[in-house]
Image 1 (cartoon, rainbow, N blue to C red):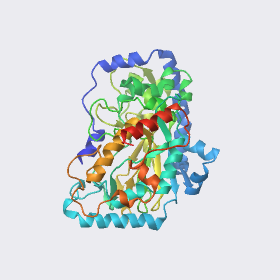
Image 2: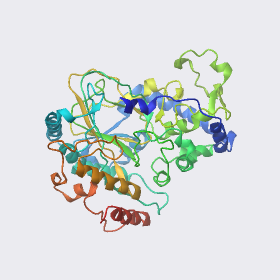
Image 3: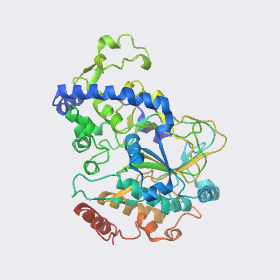
Length: 460
């Protein structure tokens, strides 16, 4: 429970230095105002489309489309929404077998299993089970992740990263039974909150948005170069992901649909980001705020808002927490209508969302069966990520929790946990860090450096 409470609970008011930060960032107030008006105008149509079409706007493709490469039209949708469901690839029976194997593993080690909430576990502190290892190294997942990572690019050819080389990040799993949830994980964005503005390197990611004028339209959410130096955690927050995940994701182990405790997303990438980044610089005019008693009363027209660089508040941000999005803090996103449950998935389907996408979890599970997933993101090879992979490789061999997660003896005394010998193909062992990374040729100098450094870090 503490893990989820730590994610988005609010902290004390911001100190005055954050007003100084706003003034430092906003070098051209008139240009920023122009951007704000342009974004608000664009949001009217974008939110209306989602209200009318709902989850229809989310791209769903068969695995075969990933293998051959998405069409221009599919890519346009994906880059607009930032959300993708890949159907097939992992046979349904194979994924159901993973779940049964997981249940057997939990049953065999019942007295040692931990998770949240403790009295009725939904999120298991299990990282090293055999089915998790088989899922993370499944050829269909590796192929999908290679493709999704390849949609990112480096604006600096010397950026030390291989965007076509996935590595494995060990995360938890979820087995959620019908009924209300013991926690509520509302709309949010992972990877820090105030850091988006406070960290100078992170701020470079939003450079075009903060230039003002029409430059926000040129924001590129798939440029990975500025992300590599960004610090997503300036406040030593607990349970932070210390590597860069361009795509968060999970693989379904059960049939799960809307109303059954599934993922909810705001399927809007660049436009929502532009609004999020500009929002702290504006407040509702006093006269416009006078009659507001609930979020739906908040006037949305641009003239009701004014540039304010004296207020240190960054709405939805709290040092040490993730970025929260609420109807009060970000009214123009209309999240009560635009954050939608993803369409029904079957065992073996993969779900991915861009790291900047606003997402949440349904509060209630009103279905009849469990809603179960393995959390498996798409993570590229960098020197920093390789160092994490080295440490994760060590914890895996000892049956301990992955480095980003609560420490303890983990599964070290569990019977039947996963082993590297369970992986019978070279590429699977490679994403786990047990084989060197190789390419016959390199995309650029940055990729060559990244692979050389990673192999050295891993001891190859």
